[in-house]
Length: 175
Image (cartoon, rainbow, N blue to C red; front, side):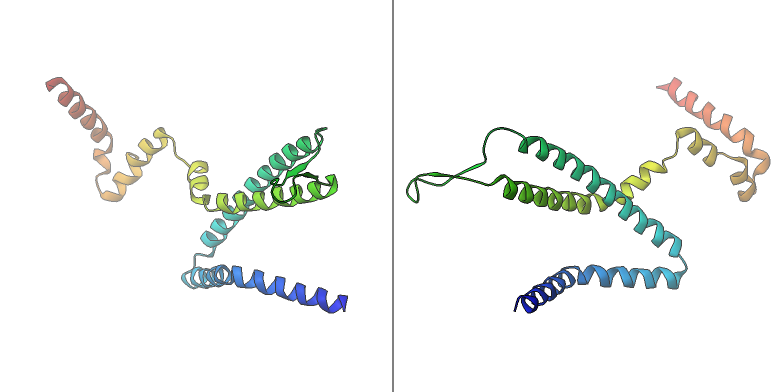
């Protein structure tokens, strides 16, 4: 009887997880097929790996912080009590430290999982921060001779920058 009960609960748990994540799995597969068809699988893999890395890192940091905080709190000498209203029992019930420890660890890990899932949605911000350009690079990219060569005005490339500076100085002098 216990084996069938175990397998039925396992089946219900797996069905519940599949039901919750079904739309996410379908979305992931269709995105993979679309990026493959268009020829941009590298972009899909980079975004997917960024989501996984950011989520796992944030979840790990949150779990380390929450578990450390909880384990320091569990070492306190104050017993864990549940205060039930006097109308029902009138006494406080002491909790077993083993139950509190197991429950606290599970709750900390679940909260860390949700923090990781929330943080994984910020993968674009992390990639923007990691591949940000400095102002000098932007200036060189905009006014590089290669741009002027492509537009056909390569000989005027070096006279364009002083012209812009003169226009700026002239406009600031008039005001």
